[in-house]
Image 1: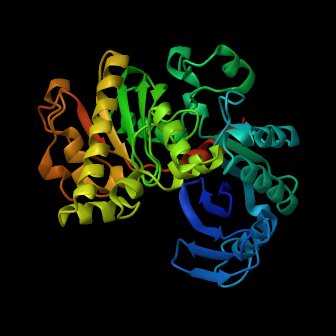
Image 2: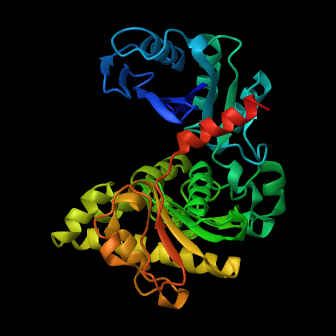
Length: 399
């Protein structure tokens, strides 16, 4: 059974074609610069590649090119879209409408689009991609949507409510939603399997660290709290995102700069974080390099990130009344062994002790990196959101 996994952004359409017989990736690629000019980058499992400039006025043209690339030319991998059993889509914001993955209908697409105010960059693009997919793939091929926010719907009200008037929650749906749920669900389950334990018996802090980062408390396989909030802006300092900031500082800065709300949002989402504090860039590799060469602001933002992660680990251990494991995932979590080491330093009180000889140099591999006498296990767990989406899709279409 072959499943196409799609991750649509405002101007991009990433995809993977997965053979569920052995969960192998047949081909993957990205239709980029939709609405601007257009480019496709496509690669097959046997090493064939296609890179071409295209005309992508909308997501529909991008889907048409995706289908053409998969089914014809030198980099084809299937003869027709009839060979695909289903399409699985990643959706960023499901709010409190969706607490699990669902099969797509016109009504579901409309509801996803209705939530675009809560994720303006993503949800409308998701709806466009879903409609484009329906117009291009055979009518008998089902589609499934997997929501980033669904995993966090198990959070209790005391964790997801803000101290705003209750009417804002009831009428405007203002609350913590959390994100990266697809990743946190995948890696926490993968960790339990690697540890040889039932996830229901584990208290885990999952650290998804990348250009966007979030920390989640996973108690018995369920999210009980997470660092991202109403939007992915909240939480720890990130590539271009500020993370948590005193709301009064936000209104003060907006007033001093003469920003509109939209301009202030852009300022905090695109011009802050690693980039804004360091002045060097938004990529952690550039920050690390600058810090090693004595750049004080790069050092500062690195210290800020590590300090904030430590605080979340401590607070979530308290919230769960215990801690069995800490896991690192995402681009930084899987590859920046120096960040992992710094986070785990001076955490003896929590029973965290790293094996530096294992951690040093470890990149992108599933591995236990805690010392033999560490009371809390520490792991690197590579994430695979596309595979989880494919598994959810398979489960729904074979019910």
